[in-house]
Image: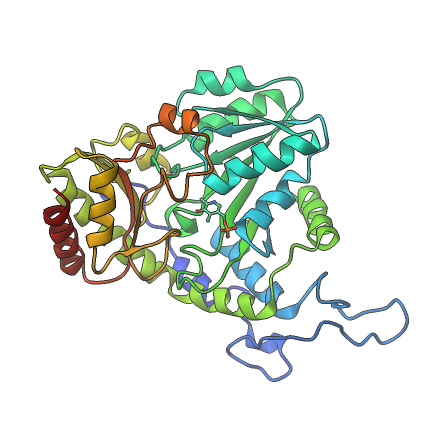
Length: 393
Ligand SMILES: *Cc1c(COP(=O)(O)O)cnc(C)c1O
């Protein structure tokens, strides 16, 4: 079984996804499906008085409905949504001030790496990237002015699993460090970072949470009231808000999140095992496989793994190119987490913005292919991989 040895499934998850924040009584019409409220302004009973909404940037009923559901799924107290995952990251980083220092895992999402190095650096926020699978290197990277620790687990595209509880404990030793976990690859169905000491969980809702590859959006989920107040201020002050229509789409997609994640999990596990036995494959990086270097950590903080993973083959750039262009079902494209299966070459696509030297150090080579296993029939996906191998090697 795909989830054998992992944490037990979260009970009541599907019920929360369908009912949390969705009470029909909150709408005058008693609509069972939350309406898309497009109004940018709301009538006030008297000057400077309002009934919960004033202006669409500072609050919107459709957005609030989604945020309430998102908070429940992570067993968090608060959730905030943003125009994109990177919009959420930018806003969270804006909790910091010039002169503060961030410690980030070395193998983060390419766009996060670019934001830290090429935007925040210029604004006076320094980031140290280091290997978070080694706790000593996390400890050594922390300085007097370190104010944030950025974890992404499993990492992208190398699927390293970081011990959230252990890194959070290191951060808490110093006291005033905010621990952020990017949980995009797993969703709260497979991992709830707040349970392991994280302060903020960040999502690109664009991926599994929406799951239909038709919305760009991000979110932050947290428990701390004071931190929520500061983020709520920034969400409005910086204006990085999503549209009500997009909020409607994501809210709807969450209703099938549990079912989708079950299927992604099962299918990716079968395909990972198939690849592990393939003669042209040298390594499969999938946290559900006992061969994974951090298998034990994965089992103590995850309830299973999603559809995204990577593998290395015996060839080089030419074989990768041929393999990817030979695929018929897997679509050659960036992104992940949708119902459709995708494949890509991180070294020249999603992670091209990571400096070559850093890429080589990490092992993001031209023979590393990343898959996002979608919801098609598993046997058809294996057939597609099989014929692509035959075409490329
Ligand atoms: C896609 C992604 C992001 C960025 O999200 P956008 O919605 O594209 O801005 C951040 N982290 C991870 C892990 C991602 O996959």
